[in-house]
Image (cartoon, rainbow, N blue to C red; front, side, top):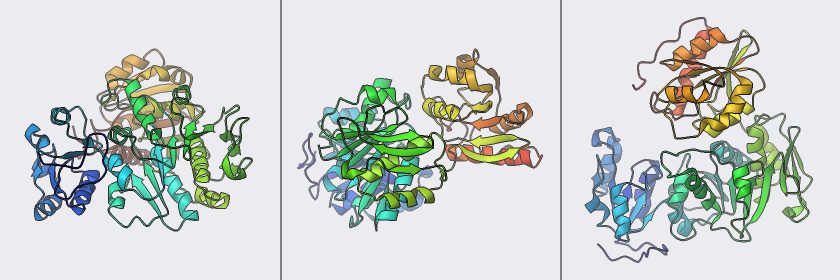
Length: 486
């Protein structure tokens, strides 16, 4: 193993000539390769995908830049012969080569650990089980109204390492942060966010974590590098968050939600967001008392009311002016496949919430609707506990139509709380929902599962739902998509 200036607890700098293995060749992995090459490192790559499934242009670029690329699996020898391993967010930390590398005291780090030492721009980080992309995108719109140059990326869009490799000449960085990124933030404290936002926590990715408690621990890592000059923004209505809010003492804590009692932050009331102090804590810059009316925006309904409150509070804490926040709120367009109205047919509204890939997202969707629901759900199970859904399903869901690998498990879970049918395809479920629906009903696609058993992504699943609904509207039979994986 080559000599390196890296020790296991702190990454002070990268020596030219040190050897770095990048694991995973997605967007973040490719950005990491370019970053380490820029720093003069000897870079190699390991990806589990077969070589013929990877982009040939990327493979050619790696070859032209003398970057060896192992494909079709990971070899222990390669992992234990380097100074540093960079792991992409999608790589489980439990694979044997990584475990063996750690036994050899080789640092295993991710994007946030590198950013902690090279990112020069003030950064707002957003994490949570649901709503991350919406709030990150919304904050980007808000900051663009008040700042000249804003970078939006991280877990969405452009990786942080791509920004760090450039001139870093933006006024602010807005970064969506996943639990997987937080897991590889480094043995030290990690990236110090000027404002760190924790939107909510509900069971998710339990196929990757040893327990729900481990997943929760991961989310709270977003606060660990903050100082008393930094701000934490937390969901005051989330019991899991509130139970842990005293566990880190450093940053100044403010809250958003409907039930803030004597907590300082952003109160949700009658479609408005009202900033308020508490008896023990005051918001900076005399912002208490400001009101933001979301009724004329794409954020007027739950859970986007909560997302709007979090974004408004984070933006004000970063020094954004009230008029710029209002401009950003008005310009924001809700993202696709997130409680999106597809059509109203014969008095029945069809809503696409394909992005709801976990139990918490389905819980929010059901609670945001007052009309009777015909629910289309199912897909690849992620290990979540469906018991939290029993009561809202009993109260609001008149029929459940289940598809995908999890349909039998979900049928057993919900059979005491709603009428259930299982179907083979999403198209068949949409047709059946149209047959069952009465005027005033909502047909809701909110799967509570991953899409990969039947689709390439949640977006493809949502697109198939949209086409199927449009076929119903045109009084034609939806065509089964030949490109869906089996």
